[in-house]
Image (cartoon, rainbow, N blue to C red):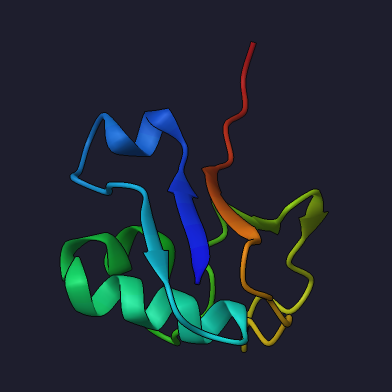
Length: 89
């Protein structure tokens, strides 16, 4: 199972609890997450099913480079972190 964590600033606006989910890619794990919490999907993915420009996803310390297919492999015990990119001073 893969652990999924959302940044606190997203959790402030929508219910996105930490979960342990199955899957061998970022996409598979997040699809399981969205099945359980469909309201989170529109904050993470755009209408083309790619990551929103303001969202970053990391597997452990490594950013997801494939922002369209989310094809990076994940293993049991790893954590996917979903961040909202913030800017400003």
